[in-house]
Every structure is written in structure tokens, then in C-alpha cells.
Image (cartoon, rainbow, N blue to C red; front, top):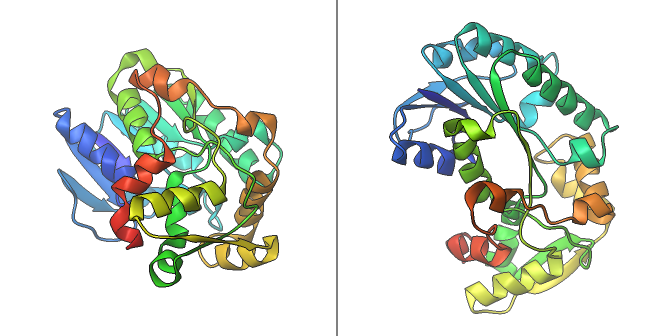
Length: 278
């Protein structure tokens, strides 16, 4: 049995499907009650690791996606790794971030790097995934595209090679199922650098109707972002998308290395999710 945390999100849903299609029993975990796409569902708050214990009973592997739980007051995500090992889990696949390598000294990246080290030293098999920016961040624009045909974003002509969450899910499934990926750290990006202005063009193409790009200041963008994430994480994100380093502009070969195909483009992601923007 494989435990998938963050099961209701953009990675957890396709990962759960992929594991079920591979014939695996899956326990899905989220903070709130949900209807699982297969197997059983357990409600747990990862900021309180003890709540995860029922999900881990009998599990052989764990996909760990912490999101805001890494930064919750009083949280100690290392306890999750210890609990998993004590429960008999033999493999952990950790969703980390590319920023651990490209900007290692920010508070949030230092916390994630510490967790990576805990996973490496836990005595269980492991793989670490470090994605860059997500194509699904474009969902922030869904309401404005539906109501005003506008994409509003900062740094309109500065891009990074954003990755499709479905590709992250497929790589995670491979790491959970195949021993060849044990001990690997994979950096996950899309196939090419794409700017917010180019994303607006791609959305217009898949919608078959005009979409206008509106440039925001950094301050305007942050004001919207802090409604759904800690201010420090918003600043980290804005630092990266506003002034990406050469390492953050690099297109990684790791998706193709694991999956045997090129990563999906932003346009492919937009086409699959076009209904959200109509």
C-alpha cells in the first residue's frame, strides 16, 4: 500500500490515478474530508504528524507533499519521516523545490534542505523531486480570464521553464514503483522557458478568443499572493520569477530521463484545463 499526501491537489490526483492503474493499493491523505479516486482516504494535518499514523499502518511507501505544512507554527516535518520509518514504510518520495539548489539560503529553502537531509539519513529508501515553477500557477488567472479576458501578472517578459504537475505526478509514480530511482534527486522543469505574456497568448490560442496581458507591479502581485500563501513564500516566488538565475532558466533533462519522453508544454497543460478559463 502506498500513501499519497496532498491527494486532492494538482499532483496528488494524477499520482493517485497512476498508482491505481498500476494495480497498487493507495491511501490518500488530505487535511479535509474528500472523496478518494480509489482506495481509502484519511484526514490528517501534516503539521501534526501523529494524525498521519492511521494512514501509515501497513504502508510500504509514502509520497510526501508538505505545502504550507512545512512552515506552520510549531511544525516539525522531520517527525513525519521518523513516524513513517517506525511504521515500516520502506520508501519515501519527497516533493522538494528547485530553490533548494538555486537559492539555498532563504529560510523556506533551508527548512526544505534540512528535511531532505532527514530523508537521506532516515534509513528508508528515498527519492527527492525538485520541481521549478508549476504550469498550474496559471489557475490564479482563471477568474480574470473568464470575466475580463485578462492575464494580470508581474515580470511579463521574464520567463522560466515551468513544469506540468501531471509530469511531476508521473515521475513520482515511477520513483514509488521502480527501485532504479532510489537515491536519486530529480530536477523537474518544462521543455522551454515561457514568459507570462507568452502564457497569455497560449491561453488565447486554446480558448479561441483574445486574452489581454496586464503587467502588475511586484507590490500588486504580492498583495494578491499573500491571500493564499505566507508573505515570505510570496517574496521567494517573486524573487525567482522576477530575476531567475541561470540555473533556474535551465531546462532539465530529468523528466525525459525518467519517463522516456519530453516534458509537456504549457500549451498542453492549458488545453487539458481550458474549461477552467471559459
